[in-house]
Amino acid sequence: MAAEPARNADTAITGTPSEAPKLPRKRFVGRSSTASPRPSTSSATPVVAASVLQQQQEVDPLLQAAIKHLLPSNYNFEIPKSVAQIRKNGAKRVALQMPEGLAMYGCALVDIIERFAECECVIMGDVTYGACCIDDYTARALGCDMMIHYGHSCLVPVDTTTIKTLYVFVEISVDRPHLAATVRLNFPHCIPSRSLPDSGSAKGKGPELEIAIEAPSSSGCSAADCGSCGCAKSSSAPAPPATNEKKADGVTKLAVVGTIQFVAAVQGLKADLEAEEAAQVERLAIEAAPSSDDEAKAAQAEQPKKDRFEIVVPQVKPLSPGEILGCTAPRLASDIDALLYVGDGRFHLESIMIANPTVPAFRYDPYTKRLTRELYDHEEMRRVRGQAVAQARESLVENGKQQAEDEKEAWAVVLGTLGRQGNLRVLKSVTRHLEGPPSSASTALVPSSPSSLSSSTPFVPILLSELSPAKLSLLRGVSTFVQTSCPRLSIDWGYAFPRPLLSSYEASVALGAQGARGWKHMGLDDVPAPRRAELENGRKGDEDYPMDFYADGSLGEWTPRFGMGVRRAGGEKGRPVSRRKREQQAPPQAVPVA
Image (cartoon, rainbow, N blue to C red; front, side, top):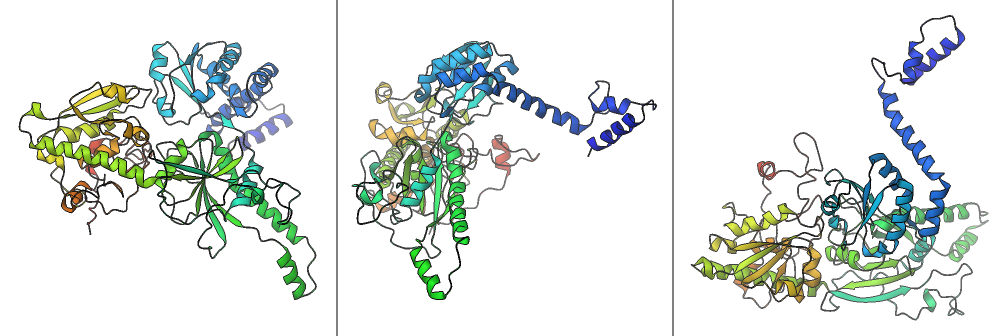
């Protein structure tokens, strides 16, 4: 509305050249001496400049030729955007950090960026497991004034890093029609009944069951001559158990997730399936109407009934919709029929499987175009982790019986130094319970705490980049290790350590922290009933193992982002809330134990 008066003034000035005042026209084009600049004009200027800059980058033939020659066409490294950001920031030395799966393209990225951005590039060679390993401290120590992190999402905000940081997700193109056809071909008849799986290896990883190899050919086949087209009917893989119950509405509710590289395909699957349904309805609508009811019934019988799907793309903030991490995954609704993971490997998939143990899980590999049924031994994992928690609690009880401080066995609290894995808030949440007895304001969830048997439990902080049994075996006189880097280190590799290696959540369960209630099948069946009730920390027995390490709405302060989703008094959101302000809020209501 602000530009309309200026356009009318411009028309009046053009029609009457004898009129003297021309100031409105000069102010409209952005004269620096304007007394009151219009907000609409100032806000539109950066948008126009950004679009022009993007067009200039897109039409650079040399840059496009270099990208086409040195990098794969289905990988989006966002080179024009990176070059523009480097020039905008005036960076002279840029650090490139990427996971090992993208390291093969590191030298090509250096050649392109140094040629077109006119800067020096440094490749960060340390291992990068995720966005939590972003190493801006080392990059700054090397004299870099900008950093580009490839392959992960913006887990660490760019306004908290020590240097200018650019995240490049490296989106990978997926054959989306094949993905939609695979879902159509296999669901819902491949979904088994909802139950807690109890088979798998000692590590908690179950076998894979191949469902289908390829989508059926366009020519189709019949049951009589099937065997050569490669469809699900001709596959030699054993068929999974069929679903016990058929939903009344006939709609299959499918939750779809993936890594950040395949989020576009995850979010587009819903549109692809809906487009197929709309096309089917349109084809039926243009057919001639039958002349009688008998013909209508016959036509309906001949027409194959297509399954209907409701695609759900869950989100756990601060992650993108459909994105999951190896330590962070959403809890799915109870009416979800199955879970579909788009991506290679099982590390990220196991995270959402742990958080939702009763939901059948499937994995679609976009590289091999295979759909497999994935299993996980939840009871074995929970039993092993529960035994580690019980052993740690017993050490606290034994320390409470010792009068002399030098006779007590110490705990070791490990602060990870690999990138930004270490978090002082998480470390202090553990050491605060070790330094003294908990608050006298007990709840029904915490009837008693072993740390209350003594004034304190000795502990020693340790700074370590990567954990290994050989490294920790050198430290004697330690009964329990607590690592604050990643909960999957304890879940996946805790059995390999001779002494308990607890995550921050497991340590909170052992220390009786408020809100850390434990989980079902903690492996305490051999413990006497009165003692088992105390070790289980008053929980009701129906809790699942949480996977909310980097979630804004995490369960407690043993996670790095606890309280970041709470709105502060000033209305700001997304920043950590101080402990003093959280304590001023109303305490949570105690849940009575049956």
